[in-house]
Image (cartoon, rainbow, N blue to C red; front, top):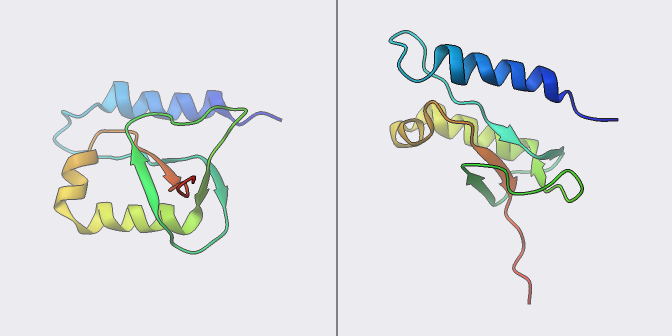
Length: 97
């Protein structure tokens, strides 16, 4: 089973191409988690692009997605940084020793 990539891409095209970042009426951020998991808020990373592959996905706690979205809505700096972007959010990886 594959993710609904065509639907997701069509939705992203509406935001990124049709609306873009110059609309005086619409501002947006499309948060893209990797493999969603249950779990509490933990450390997470936000990247400008993909950081994993279909065969080596990274996990993202749903609580981390909610936390990041609340930060976008609450902090002007966070909104200004990611406005008009498609940030990828993943759980922070444990340091390997």
